[in-house]
Length: 64
Image (cartoon, rainbow, N blue to C red; front, side, top):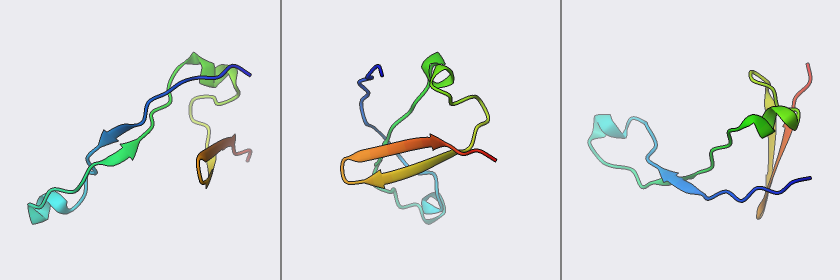
């Protein structure tokens, strides 16, 4: 299995905060993209199960 090194970015959540005119604090964001996802069995349109424990995120393609 080839490892990838990614960087956690930040984004500002789109929410009702705009209606309240009060900015929300930025939240962490991790974006995955690339042909390697298809090669790893994550085709476009697949539903993915995400499991989270401290310091680890597991992604699994959900089968119908």
